[in-house]
Length: 391
Image (tube, rainbow, N blue to C red; front, side):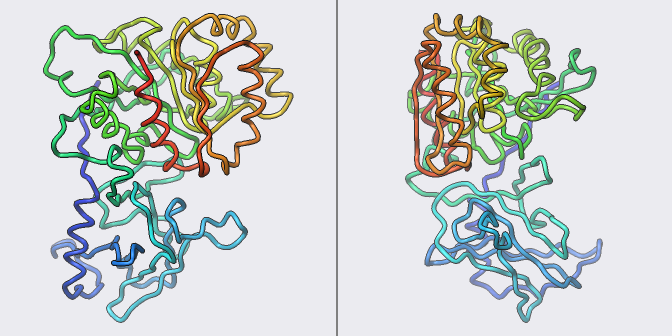
């Protein structure tokens, strides 16, 4: 079953917010069901590049805003409390402004009100997240132009796919991007990229805040990327003893035995390994190492973002399980792409992973960027990775 989902760019809301900020804000007050809703700019860019967050919450004692990738918002990684403390003004609004300018890009945020984490009630764009919903906003800029909506290019479609997993005995979900022109029908068949999210996210992440659909739209329009279908699986499975996020054999069984065959049966795919790729970030990168790299007969090309193999024990288990399969991978000519930020907390896993690739003679493209474990890097990696596929 396929359901189409709409996307509204928050940059539009930011422009509306900027206009609304010029006028006097209505008083923050509770509205009854019969009254019109209260509208106010909850995310407001300032002239100096900083961003003000605003929330109308009555009868509360404290409020904070959490936005881990936003410059000028404490992450809490240094031991200090995460987020920005919000102060209440005379009109009843809680607000806080970043301590530094915010670079163009796509960002998530949430409020914490008297200990309860909530998404922005004024938001129009959300990401589900593994730990609760997040709101999303964008700031446009030339450096991230290929990651944002462009009105003058053709756009693909993002839909939600529900399918029955025989491996897990339950209904599963995936998000699917089909390129411009696919929905018009025809006989053309397309290569497929299976693109997996990280531990703190869900299968909506690569489109909700990764802008994967817009990146593909823009690169296809520029002739830099071959039109492709992108399937974004649900990276988590029901929790049970013996299965965990980074070596989740339940995910691997569902992917290989259920999702890939289902997609080939219901979409116009080129059902050959050379026309099929797998990539992922963080936990999704670990899934790719575990269930993509050792399966060259299924995935001809591989992309691993911001993860690796950690410690002698994990490396030994991996080699024991995949020795023959890695030797088979070394004999193929498909792309293997490995990207990580220099300040990423997972950087200690890079050397062991590269050692495994070198040990088996697996050729790969290595992209060591600045930055850390962030969507800022993952969108850039996708923008660098996809033009290399299916050539």
